[in-house]
Image (cartoon, rainbow, N blue to C red; front, side, top):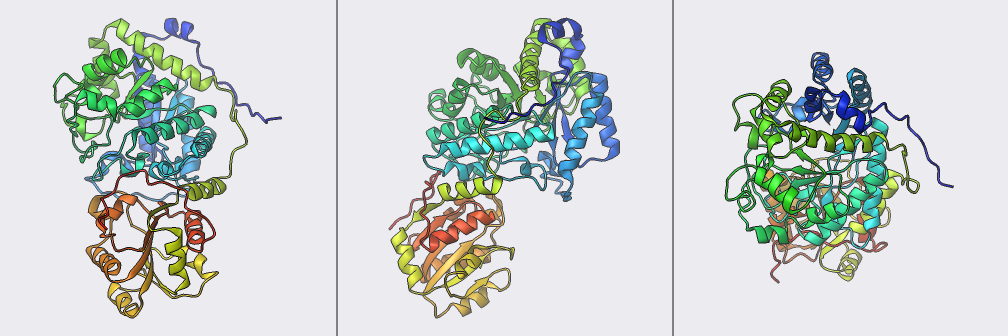
Length: 544
């Protein structure tokens, strides 16, 4: 018989009683979800406790630290590693709940697990890797269940995922690897599977970033991206995953900071503060009646537009957002909403939020599905189901390995296991850029024809060529042009657009640098496993 663990049911007021017992100001306080930082000073923690107790805010969204927050792109402050972040997170959640008059709804961005924000917690593959998993959506459900379990143990109720953006712009600086890919059907099915896994284990979900942040080359943390497409085109593509998520019971929609004139009546304004987009299009046309959450209101796409404190919070609420995420001016925002909003408007958003809180707190089942899978075992299964042959065939790789080769590792770190695993079965030499210069490696392989390359891009984002130096790019392109090359990539597949691959014998995409992904890739090279994955994005065309 399935084992069911029960958690203590919090003291949350039922909605009919809450409507009468909360003052109008307390109800407005429930709209606010300011940021909470795991690695914060005691002074800042006390300030947040005061904010919670004085204004009865509805919830908190946790981030690692102020230095790692989204708008630190200009500051470039050092993000300090803290091996005890998870312990601190649990302690802070309890501490903040204790000073709250009404239980707080605790949220976090844990798209690939708590590891997105918290050290020494289980990490699962990026969405782009999950997008490569072909015909095994049950794997994605299991990822959601595992992440939900980790969230629940920490005291978190709401995971701001899945990302429903279709990444159809290779230069996208902020979505990219966070998207399941460039095909609307694949994105929709994977997003639904992840959401179902989270919900089956009692964690709330949110589809983001409505109406679709994939086809942009501007980071909305810094500026306002323009999506200059017709309404018909948006309905056909960008909005397809959101529509399907709504039909499959997504708990909430997060609205991004995007200029979409076709949906905003021709206006050049952010979707997050657009009545036409939220109230008119999302609610009235698409029929979504669940909770709408603003993307972080500290993001410069909107925050720089409002000089007076409280005006942005009012604009976001008046546009149709129920929850104001990362609101920085809570006191002023509450007062401005109370001054300007109709009581009916306040009651409608409060009803949605309270219903969501009851759903979160009344879920007594810690695990309502099958037994959870060990993270390492699940990641190995994902490695096996996502590994993708982009160029070449198993026969090409087999013949290559039988004829002798030298390995070249392009990496900044020395703890990679791909070549070490191959060495358990085959004798060969390999050289790493962590130990040798590219010039010295070039000399050592000058007489070698067969070269096996393991590429570990330093960055997962496309800025500065994924962190690859011009020296590395020139070296790799020369190797591909002049040698018989088999390349295994442990990183974002968009990096392949930087290379002239038409002369490569084989290119295999492993996506992640996790040890189990490297082990699986090594076994593939040795001919012991097959590559089951399918590339979830479109790369530059390879001309024969």
